[in-house]
Length: 301
Image (tube, rainbow, N blue to C red; front, top):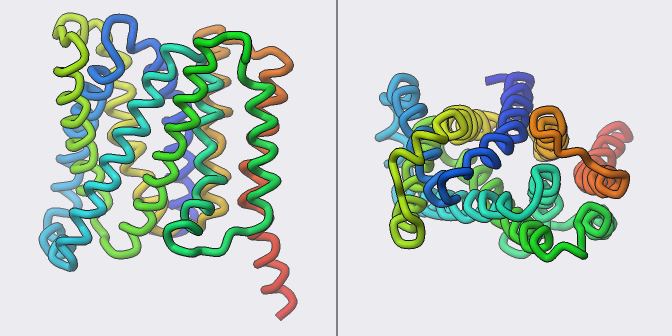
């Protein structure tokens, strides 16, 4: 796969993730967040598994045998971080609006290099710190501190972004070692669906007729977001550099806010727009600045 095709995969992934917030929001009219997530990722698994077997069945055993312990370690870590990230994000939509949920989710972009520094001792570029400050200011403009429900929702999304950051880091590390992204995406969807179903049985009332009432939302969030998008993400992170990938992923908030405005009439006020803008600038700053330095060094050689 070429770099340009990987960039296209990242862009399509971002568009699907952004517009999937509509399905995630409207899909809980009759069911809880864990039930929605379970149904969503079961659909994702059913979508991706046949594609994985068609494209990768001849190299699954070979790849797994490269390092079985490492393979299952990343499978557990990625499925767990994805489960926690999607559950927190899904639950947040009970309290806050789509734009807030989407823009606070992209906090994972400046968080990624900080986590890489803590775990892998990767050097943190100075641009991360002003980016975090801009994010904090953006939170002030975007959130409504007078509304306790919105504050709960926004807090859940910010926590969810930590798990998204871990998921992206683990995906990058996995793709450095293994080359079965579609099969891995299928296994990941199966495990997240299983975790969600287990806790839904404990904490929510599961009613098949209510699930069927949300069939369109589940199919979109499951087939496109839970299946196709997470598979395309694995392809994107095989060949794409971190900076352009992160910038494209940060557009998730833009696509979600536009979709919420056009489809659900969730109109942003001036403060909300300023907050969204500051968070987007922070995300781009955290990724562009290190790349400009590398480009300058390269040109001076």
